[in-house]
Image (tube, rainbow, N blue to C red; front, side, top):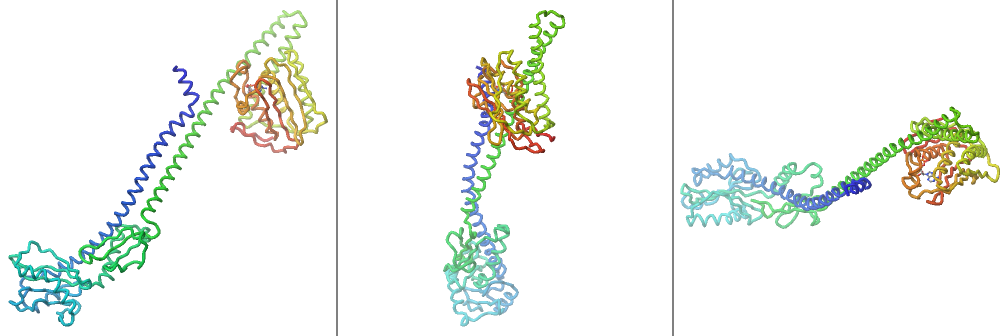
Length: 558
Ligand code: ADP
């Protein structure tokens, strides 16, 4: 059971590793999506609250300005109130006020004193004004005073000295401050009549500007749309017409000018659009990051599993090669000993022993050649000597030599020459012979009970096909892709019983590619295989093409 689990983990480690990363990543993405959409909602609300805060700040600045003016001007000393007009005027002259059309003092028990009830001082002319010249002003003040007058007449005691604002006449807005005696009885009222033009053209724009840097950076300020409207809704600041969605927050002023509104929005994008853009940007960044992480993990796992496979194949290679070397060497030593000791009298027998020694030595040479070649290829030191060659002759000679020794092992190796003479081809004949030897060797090794191997050479248009065909065990389609990889050996069936290094085909492929050709396999399990070396008839040129052997090595130059 434990072994089964271990095997399962071993075979599916790539997928398990991927799952171990992908599942938490998908969960994280889901959560991120949730958080981001919540953030989208709250950030829109927060942004609007921020805009409201700004309007409040402007409103507070305005209030602070007028309260400061009123406090400075309206605290009339007791001893002056209701006494001499000229002393009062002198007192008011000393005050500096801004944005005020008139300062007035009203005494409700005027009948007892020198005052004529209401006195209005003009800070511009620094003198009292006549009612006949400013009837509406006096009327507005009278209306504002009336509640106070009632309080005074009724003898109501003041509990606080808070200022009040009267805005019944929008062009004469008034700040009032009650004056009381020691017993808190209302004696009169001092007040300011505000200058609307000053507020509109000077104070409000100034306060708007003053608060801006505390709330918005330079870039945001450029896109900000600020409007101020009077009680009729007429724009006094900002464009006269704005779309409804552009004014995102609209709020009234407090204290004075309370029927005016300030509006704030941004040109082009609304807060919701801005939040949406942020949401999409964040989401795409997160998705991109997840893809990169996932890609990286897949790449890492692939590389790791490839490395594991390669190292396993390398250790198999070492054991295979040692076996391949040890067995024939032991036989060669044994037969050599027999011959040396003269124990074999029979001529036929000693010929057979000699032949065996020769065949095995040749095989060993081929194995060692393969290993040496492989190491040259790996280090990029493998070079080829290309020259025009009659390939037909090279193949014929090689097959003849091998056929003799194979015949004694019961294998029939045949050469089917091309029907017509073929032109010379520029090749390294030694290298091509070695490639052919590897293919024939494989055909012998993986032929099972079948004993017929055919080598044929054909011209196909502008290329030559040199093929080795056997009727052996064949190779499944999925394995056909892998057999050219170094150290790769098909891991099932007969192959287990046949020793090999797993280098033969990778060397063949390298040699063929260095000649500008390709190696193809046509095989079916149980029916045999045909490996074909396709060589172009065109000269590949002095410069040899760089060949990538499993992505690891580069070919050197001649
Ligand atoms: P090896 O030393 O194992 O023969 P090769 O690189 O020559 O190494 O071949 C790789 C694998 O391809 C072999 O282990 C074998 O499984 C498969 N193979 C090669 N030639 C044949 C063939 N003619 N018939 C069946 N399988 C073959």
